[in-house]
Image 1 (cartoon, rainbow, N blue to C red):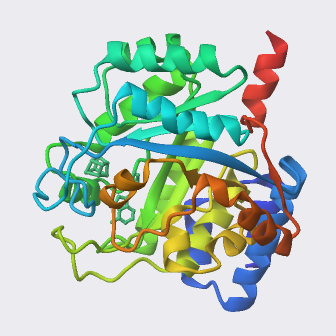
Image 2: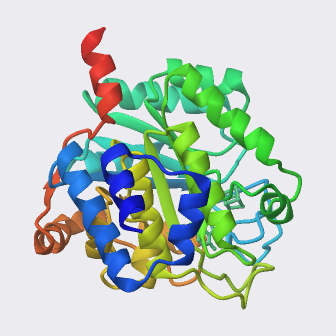
Length: 349
Ligand code: 5AD
Ligand code: SF4
């Protein structure tokens, strides 16, 4: 175990066999050691800074039917909404006043928002707010669509792979495929986006093999950002009643991701904060260095229910975030927080 931990820390690599051994034998003292090595790695790459993002959930319509998600099209109980262009800018203006430099536009897969509508909004954001990064989180689209939105000024794209185990992926995502998901991720990368992947911890049927699949997939893909959160059961989905994912396993996955991809931007996710009152602090101590704060209009928040009891931290609660980060010796950084390799590329051109 010591050898594996040392190799992770010094070489940022691990074989499948070593990873399975580690996951099967991770006693508490080793787990704590793993957190510590991951935290030290963040200090070496980005320093003791937590980057903040403003998250705008602009539509909760979705054409997909992911079994775990409260926004799935099969859920007829959810009140659907779409924000107008004006509502979107009203919210972003708030964030801009507070000094946010990254806006994440997130939504279900909603065909109402055509490339034209989105490109127009993105261009407008980039001209109104200088030096702001635009992150999209709007699911699977064609390569042409991704290109148009990139050319309109979008900088980053979040598309979690959700699970890298084919059988699990297929049984959770009716009408979708892991191959297509990966094709989308590769397209996004090739186009030039800073890409975010990631997975849900504790989905029904998950094994250590599945966790290993996820981590090794991330190591191969080398995304700029990785979102990892525990599964939280939602009453109006087919997965209601299944056990929630574990906070401890989520933290372990964050640490392993930090060690395998030292330069990744890793959020302490909303789902982690929902299951643990100290999710942010624990996340940072395990290797996270990003937090996404909500800037959606109040009425929209309640309706954007991916899972039950979603813990919302608002863009106005920066003070609280600062205090919590201070407890683990971190400071809030209001900069764009680009991925280190991309920053170097920007400098080189
Ligand atoms: N529990 C945890 N995470 C979920 N997501 C969707 N539904 C759930 C759930 N019930 C995650 C998915 C998606 C992200 C926006 O939210 O990973 O990519
Ligand atoms: Fe739609 Fe995303 Fe929910 Fe799947 S996880 S149903 S794609 S909003």
